[in-house]
Image (cartoon, rainbow, N blue to C red):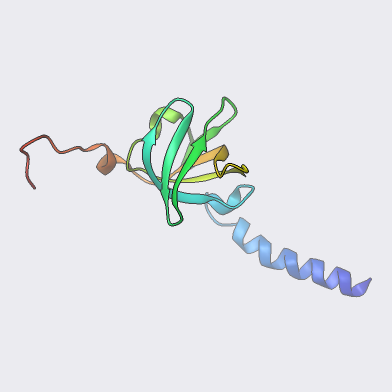
Length: 118
């Protein structure tokens, strides 16, 4: 009994410092899938991850956040860095419960015009 209590207290001691940080994916339930938005549609996102391109399914229940503020699917732009929390289906698609949009996406919305050089 004492051993179980000691292990439980140790686990809580490891978790509490991480939950005291600012708003970040670790404050949400589940392990996030991180990547860059390749395309966005009303019902899905294509996300480029380290493991390849993943399809993220969006529903009416999917919540969107940027920092500590609510956001929407309209805030998810091609090139944006996001973290997706959800359920990976047998098909490999991710049914998103939350989409966390990272930082500013102003660079992601800039598209070079034909003939324009940097």
